[in-house]
Length: 204
Length: 204
DNA sequence: ACATTTTTTTACTCATGCGTCAATAAAATA
DNA sequence: TATTTTATTGACGCATGAGTAAAAAAATGT
Image (tube, rainbow over all chains, first blue to last red; front, side, top):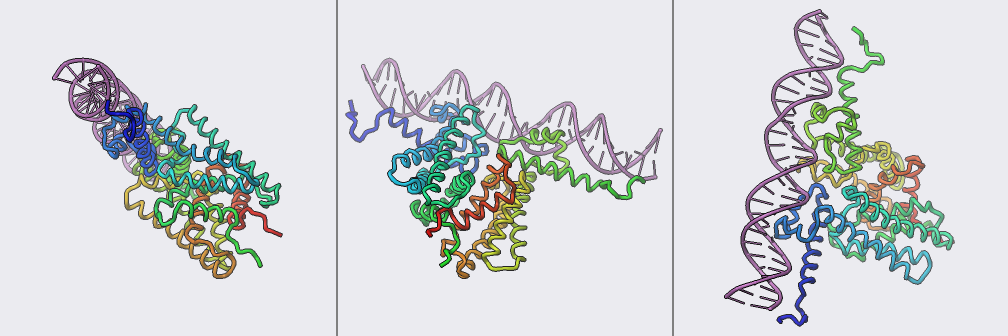
């Protein structure tokens, strides 16, 4: 019998754990070197198995990329859902959305796989991911607009502003990993402050 | 004789012109699809020649990428040099540097080739380009520091701030090309405004 | 028109890397 | 221990795409 499921992981669990681990490794390398520049042999070797073993867990290289990207897009979705259920003004919600989004991205770390690679996927998968990004963007714009009406934000260009932020965020990880002197919380707080308040000194 | 060099281009000139044109096309496609995902056959076909013709102008694919990236880094360098010879406070210089940098990038348009691809180059070339970027970053940080001392900027974290801007800028092109409703001047002005003043309304 | 040089093409070689298949190893079950 | 299921491997097929060599074409000069 040997398994009344205390600390011991079940068959399915082990399989899922290995899958996740492989996904993380792949995501990290895709990030560092780019999707096309990374061979499955490389990923496999890093994990400590053979390329063929990967095919036991993933249909093909494309699917591996697809799932990596999904990890990233889930961060946006999670942040959005949490923000929607957050009680406060549009301004508060916006601040929360951005802060949380950045934190999640940094926690997921290696999972961030640059959007550029999205074109390597089949049309259908592309559409899906782009649509998810659009949802985040739309929500972000909506909050900005509302916050302007509230008087919390000055009347900026909504589209440019949203893009400005989402674009800047994409780089957070690239240079955050380089020096881990700061915690995700610190980094995202700094970031949000810059975005909200700019850098010029307030005239007396 | 047929060529006392009025409107007619010389041998060398034609060659250089073709080279530049090819470079532009390559840069654009590298941008859209990524370096590794782009075949030289594709680039050649887009130009209207055969792959082999490219080898008459460029040593190999790597060199093509190298020169594409150089076009981009030249924007940073040019902006920096112009800013250095610009008369005004550190704050003015900083504003000029950023504005000019964005404009040059947008003018060069297709020439922007994402930094991620840099890893495809041999060590030596990488070092050179990274060093050039570092120069821009260093200059930017120096100006920020000075501007803080001047009292023009609030005491922000210099490193994060510089990275914040340079990161955000990298995305300007990706979404600017998508809708060309705005001129480079307008876009960069908006951008600079957001960066300098943030988005929150000034309390009465 | 003829010779020479510059440019481009056609037709290849060769390495890399995705994906498959049959064979094995490991683990669970009986 | 024997048997079945799950996990992994080694050895391959095959397509793609970088790079080359030699020949053709176009431009230039005499």
